[in-house]
Length: 133
Ligand code: SF4
Image 1 (cartoon, rainbow, N blue to C red):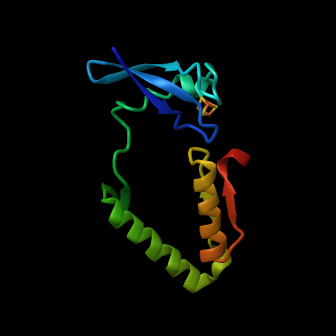
Image 2: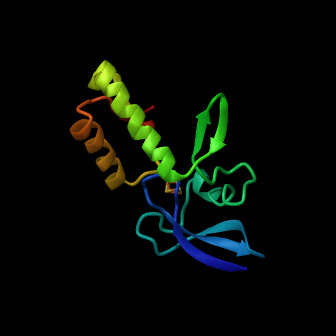
Image 3: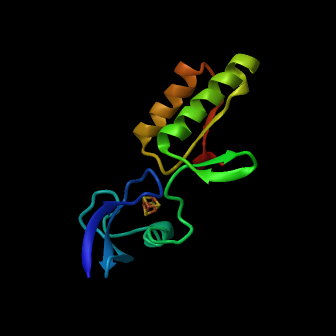
């Protein structure tokens, strides 16, 4: 078995643990005892944070609904489509027809940038975060 020190991807607390790897597959986690946030502890999500890595249903690329079917797309294609649709909605229905929902998986800094994008770029206060639900 080998270990790789990582930051938990499940929320912005930023706990740290070692991914335990055996035969090229993630098989468990061990909390980092000297990390200033987690100090050797993890919540129930953190203890399971290795299971999605090799999950057969894990999304590994953006998906686009195209003609009634969902297909894989490149990140460039997906972001171009998002921008095109956001600008189209804004032009047809106004800024407040848009709403932005962020994720607890982002860092505080990423969430701040997301909020700035909604308020400064798209001129709407319709921005929220899943941790408030
Ligand atoms: S999901 Fe749990 S273990 Fe992971 S960073 Fe958040 S509090 Fe820490």
